[in-house]
Length: 406
Image (cartoon, rainbow, N blue to C red; front, side, top):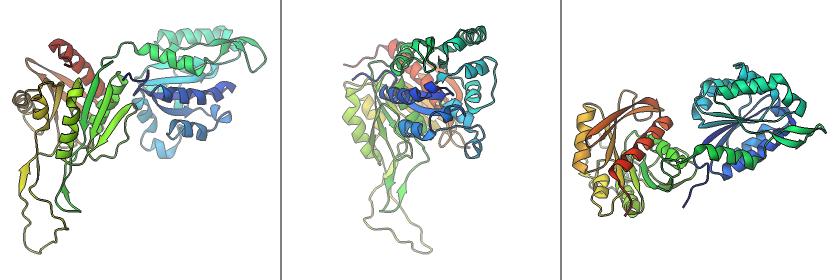
């Protein structure tokens, strides 16, 4: 099944002041129909034409309007938005916003985010045809183009002021088509990818369990990035407090045995299996049907047995996918990870250090990639960026080893 043109793409839509701001509501709907996740920033001028509530209802996310929102900026909200976005689109882009971007101003939330982001920025201008034709506007546009900012449109036609000419905002479907065209061939186009993420919980009794500190963020970031790169993604998730990435099919499980069943049921139908879950190695031999009562002064003894080795079982299948394992280590990372790669017979392993605030429960990570005959260090960055880099390496290794679905 082919993915929507913008599946998994995180689009930050900036809406500036002008009568064309009402058309941005339709653009949000079209972007979401194309598979994108959308968040919206309104300038002060835009809020005179359209309300934040409209965009919140259409996008499914709170709308930001001010750099001086104390609740958001206490956590450096403008930086969070800048890092979150895969693509920034300003539509409509007024002559004023274009001028401020060209001169590097950061005097409101939208221009500050544009300066802070590493994501590509595209603008869809909308203004009176005389304003569009002015040398100052054209010089500003030329400056922005030289800085690799993409200009979408404008179209020509009748305008709200009663004049006719260039300066109309491109229609929403045309903006979406322009964004889709820039994506080009994606590393996982046409591939089916199975990903496991999060912890597993092993019950002791009806109120207690054995678990681990995995947040699931790395696996979820890989799932979102895989969908954005054209894959048909199934995510087998342990218990986490995360939203399902756009364009991803999610299957919830709790225990290691439930995760094993869900993975093996789907493994041979997929081209890639990324085992990012922190699967518990052990579970209680038996589970009490009633809550175990505390006995003062006496220790509680639990007999633990090993859980199944999901990755090794997938590797042993006669029609197996390309397999990427994860190794969370506290010491001697490369030696332990390479031994795991060889012991399980998998194609690639991503090793990372955990503990002391690293790995689990953190927003960023670093990975040491190891394969037969080679290795590469992916430096610390946010988990979504790291996921993109990991998927690029997976594509390269799949090509190098000529692993294909049977």
